[in-house]
Image 1 (cartoon, rainbow, N blue to C red):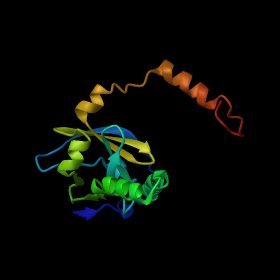
Image 2: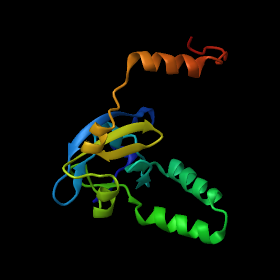
Image 3: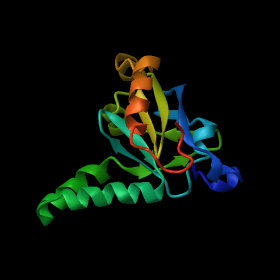
Length: 165
C-alpha cells in the first residue's frame, strides 16, 4: 500500500471533506475510499477511533488536536498513558493501494460495526467511517423544518459583516 498524497489532486486544498458514500468491504477488510474524500486527506493522515462506534480518518493537524484533548483530560500521568494506549492501539496510518482501497483491521471493523459495507461521511475536519447497518439504524435523514430551526438558532446572534441572514 502507498500513502495517499495531495499530489494526486492539485486542487485538494479546496476540497472539503463532505458527503456520504457507501462502499463494500471485501473479506480481507479492504474498502474503496471515495475519491472526493481521498483527495482532501493529506499525507500522514491516520485512521483512529471516533465516538459512537465509528472510525475517523484524521488529517495530521486535526489528529494532533484530538490527541492533545485526551492528554489534557487526563488527571494523572497514569490515566494519560492509559488513554493514549487505548486510542493509539486502534490508530493506523491512512494508506491506500493502487486501486484506492484502504485496509481496516479486524479490531477497527469491530469498533465501527463494519461487516459487509461501510459508509464514509465527510465531517469537514475528518472523515467518519461506520458500518452500513449502524448508519441505517441511526436514521440520520435531514428534516428540512428541523434544519431551519437549527439554522435560525445558530445564526440568531450572528451580526458579523457579510454574515448570511
